[in-house]
Length: 625
Image 1 (cartoon, rainbow, N blue to C red):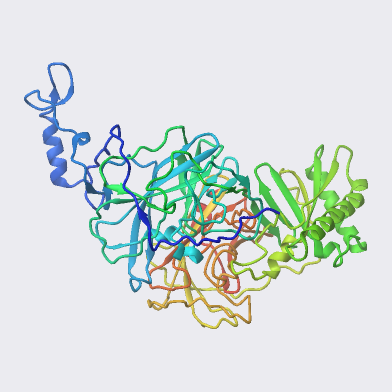
Image 2 (cartoon, rainbow, N blue to C red):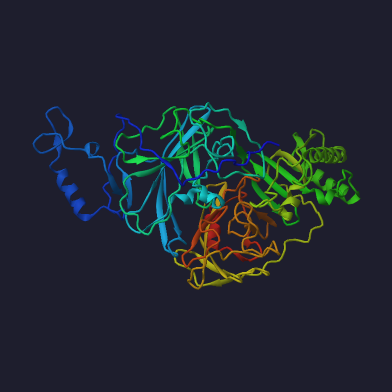
């Protein structure tokens, strides 16, 4: 099983190689926006624009924009290059219009809980057919505290100053990670790319990329900067014409970013923007996309659900995998089915006869990450073959079966947390036998595994609704949690694109205080942390990976869309880490939901509590269907 090698040369932003954008005399200056710092057109400016409208005409040659005397007026293209305020943020006016932009806002521990903000702009995303380069701008606010660009880094790798940004190719159902160098550290941008697929792995390296630094810290008031901070990252080229940009581990992706073809970003020749380079041998990105790269990883996105009887379904595009836990089919280290397992396989046959007519069903064996790779590969193949032999005689004519064993290489969820400690409940989910076929409407055929339903959680207490939320609830500290901290959980809003629903929430201190490193859980009781065990950051750090939505009448539990062990389309680690503030820390999660849900929908926060989602949010989440 291929994996990214661990970093041997830690990338340190302590002595960055600052770069100024290289020359490009053909670069067109930014079209100025007539907006105040609060985004509104001032009345005096508006009056002036209307007055000038009556004085503007054409010259003798028919050129528009002439003044009252027929002389050409000065346009924004002739404005003096400068750092200017646009929409409330400082920006070089010689940069191109952004393809997409979003404001990032968080309470900051560095600033005693004060809310800081910045604007992220995608300036370019260009493909050469094999690799792609993205150029970002990180803009400080004209007023208020500045959220440093280090917030684009993975939480556990924030000291590295390296951004963790991914591309979401929704059309092809893929999560695309940045290209990486041999050791995840410094790289030679002049070296030709020699890229191999890293493959599936639990050891996700979030501290290295073919990129520049994003190491800026939070500031009380940044003021007008000397230059605009630019950041670049190189990726495997997306297949689609547009993607989403998932910047950091906590902020919702920026949608509909177009991918250009062979149109490299061109830099202004004015010293007003530049990079802080990882590659100390260069002051700017190399001309060749992916220079110095050795590893790439693109992972399929799946919408995951579980019946309340324990049967898991993972959908990726038109394909679905219906999985049974190996623990209910086989004894430890065995590939023999007992009588109860034979009954369960018979119920699977009924489901396949109703849903997979005329198809080839691939029966797949999977293991967790315990034991040797070769041993697990062999065991997974033997178990898939045993199930195939048992079920073949029970399937209707026209349904054929094939078998595959994948050992530990395709985990459904992360086997370990970021510290490498095992997550037993996830390992159990990964030990499975799956049935893969083209997704159709659920037949309603149930498979009884003998499970007794969901673990009981306390009912969260509804409290006074926070500003900007549709409902707020109090989550008590889980039993055994060493902090004893109560958390206010705000349900903000939701949206739907017809197939996926995105839920937006926040958490805060209900008493209006500030507490650092409060989410500690209990080292002796692994399941005692708010939000469950986090596989992507500090074990007890808040995140949405373990959050689920239960359709009570439909008897189905839905989890955020994920990329196996590599991540999820959700807040993987809260932007505030393990700190708690009076102001809410925003989080999101994207769910793949069926065409119709029966309801009511209950949100489950592992170990902490559950509550019914307000009907207004359900309508937003499902698109009213």
